[in-house]
Figure 1 (cartoon, one colour):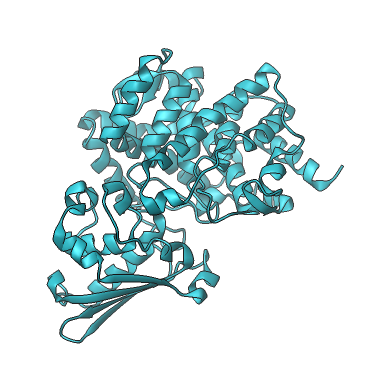
Figure 2 (figure 1 turned 90 degrees about the vertical axis):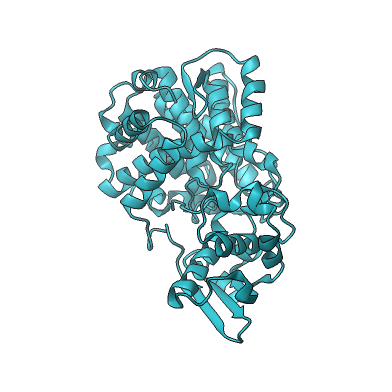
Length: 454
C-alpha cells in the first residue's frame, strides 16, 4: 500500500491515542486561549443585524437542544448551534488564526466541539484535547497543500478539523476516524477569496459550514457511509482545491511539533494581512510623536507589502464588513480616530467623507522580496508623505500576535472582558473566563453550560 494510503492510518491512531499529559504547558495554554478567545468574539459577532435575522430564521424550525447560541441567550441542537456560532465568530474579524495553517483553524473547530461537548457531557479536559487535535490535524493538512489563491480557506479544511474534534469527543475507534477524515475532506465548500475583496458577507457562513458538516461527517460514518480511501488527496492533490499535496508532510513532527502554538490572536478587527500595515503605521507614528496629529497634514501614503497583504488594496469601501479587508481604509480610519476599535470600522466611519478622502490618497503595492520571505516574516513598509515635504517611515517585520511577537496575557484578558462585558453582565463574564482558564477541572461541560446563559 502506498504512503498516501497509510498516512491517514497513522494520523487516526494519533487522534485516538494522544492525551493532555503528553502536551507541553505552552500547547495546553494556547489551546485554552483558542477556546477562551473564540467565545466572546462569537458573542459580539452575534449582535450584528444580519446574524440576529439569521438566528430568527434558523431557530424557527430547529430541533431543541442544550447547546449555546453564544451571545443570543438561546439554546438549540448541536448542528444549528455550531453553524450559527461559526458564522458569528468571523463577522468582526477578531478570531484567532494561523499563518502556517493558511487560515483560521480555531473558529472552524471550536463551535462544533463546544456544541458536542455540551450535548454529550464531555469533560473540560476532553473538550480541550478535542479542540487541540482538530486544530492540529486540519492545520497540517492545509499546510501540506498548495491551495489556490482564489479559494477562501474558511469552510474547506475546517470541516476536517471539526470532524476530528467531534470524533475524538465521541471516542470513536481509529478505523472509524480514518473514514471520517476522508469523508470530511470531500464535504468542504467551493469558497471564493473574492468575497473578501468585495466585502461579501456570504463568506461568513463558510466557517459555520465547517462546524455543521464536520458533525455530519461523524453522523454519516456512524450510519455506515463510506468515503474514498483517501478523500484528502483527492481534494487537495488532484486539482479540486489544490494541485499539489505533500501527504508525508502531514506526518512530519506529528506529536512533537504542535501547530496550535504558532497561532496568532487579533486585537484589530480587520483581516490578518491588514495588521502588518497597521503595525507599520504604528511604528511610523511612535517614531515621530506629534508629527501627524491631523490627517490634513498628509498628502499621500505609500504601502509596500507581501502579496496577500497587497491584495487588500481596495478603495471603493461601502460597508463596515468590506472596510475590514482594505489596507487604505484601515490606515485612514485609524489616523482619523486615533485607534482601531470597532467604532473605527462602523458604518458611520465608512460614511465619513474625511476618511474616504484619505483612503483615495493611499496606495498599496507588492514587494516580491517581501512575498518570498512570507510566512516566516510578514514585512510591510508604510511611508506617510506630509504636506511640509517630510516623510514618516514605519516598518513591520513580524506582525503583533505572532509566536515571535506575541500579545501579553493581560492584552488577551482585556480583549475577553471588553467584548464579554458588552454582551453579558460582569458575573457571567467572570465565570466564563475562569471556566476557560481552568477548563481541565470541569468534569461535565454539559453541566457547566447549563449553569451559564450566554
